[in-house]
Length: 129
Image 1 (tube, rainbow, N blue to C red):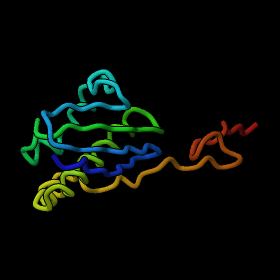
Image 2: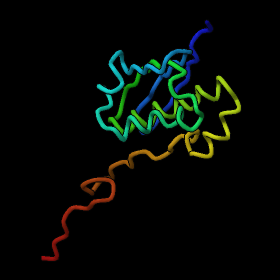
Image 3: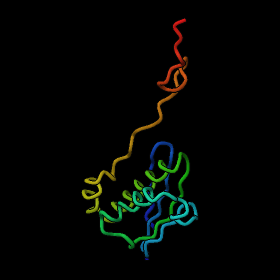
Image 4: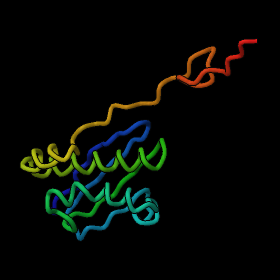
């Protein structure tokens, strides 16, 4: 058996290190069960999408170390990491994953807060008198 394919996925401030190896489709995140770590069904569906579009559901075991950000950012990071690993395994997966938008790193980041304002764009309440 060959060694695991290691890739990195990022989204917002989350970084996911993904290890993919031949197996039965078990996914563990930070040494926890995948279902326990990502409680929302939408996040679990999002993470399984790369396997679904490439017809590899249940063919690989995934081990993920993810840190930073919130749950949605982490789910996005894991998805990108898995997609990159599938391309590393088989280059023919690239066009399919690209078509479903799974190979693109989401560049959106939090805009910084500006001085004289409450948040990045929200102002303090204006009083005419």
